[in-house]
Length: 335
Image 1 (cartoon, rainbow, N blue to C red):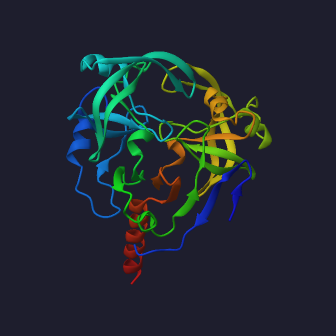
Image 2: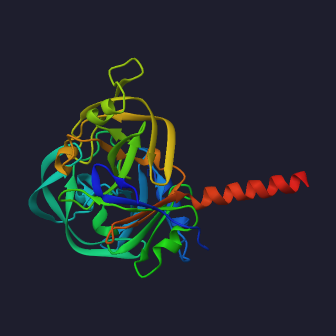
Image 3: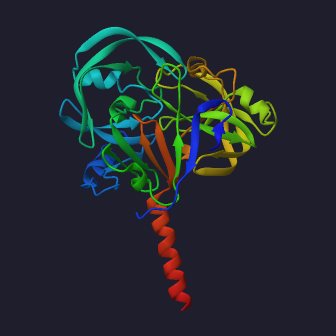
């Protein structure tokens, strides 16, 4: 099986076909509640919609109350609440700690939470991170991290705009279905994040699957190895990367060519070239580092089993159904 040349823990297995922001108003939250449905096997049931910031939002209950709009972040080890939310809901303070975000570290006082739950799965008796409020003023309540997703099979479908947390006793390969690719994900040093093999213009590197990032990022070393010049006229100054701790890191944005990772090949990709401190923490700042954001996950169905470190990536079930419906209509129109 193919192995990532910079991370021997990552293996890719094509599988055979099987049978089977919230705005400042409450409109988005109403949609999140109203369109939730009861599950069928492998069918996502909780709405996962892009908010006005571009982040994927899901309805989360805090201490049994809610739901509140939380960002779904596969790139975060632990869940968190924003400072404004902790204050407004009078959540008790916890202990002194340090938040290690994508763009650096910041001291904090944690927030004590009795329970966080998404799609019926709850974690309890927590000291969650209290992250600084967003500089754009948008009031997202918090972040769902890997701690809430562990112990379940997470099914994210960006085409259907849904997510579900299914029991690990269910057959994840069957849930993944036709056309999905299985990846034995690699690991991040001292972290829960999942890594995948990636190539940029045929040059290999290591990618982090990060649904908490609106846009995809590549480090300078990887960009240069892939014959990309962020100082060229094709690039411009991009918005700074801020991460959970809101520390700005400058970036350059522009086209990098063809990007391939298991389950997806995309051309004329535009990303930010930025050297994130988290690449140092992960242990590959001097290597070819890539951070897959939401912009490269459109119309994808991603099944994650954190405990087994297995990921399946394939086409969205809604996009596939739409294509089949169009084909059916076209054939009958010709007939």
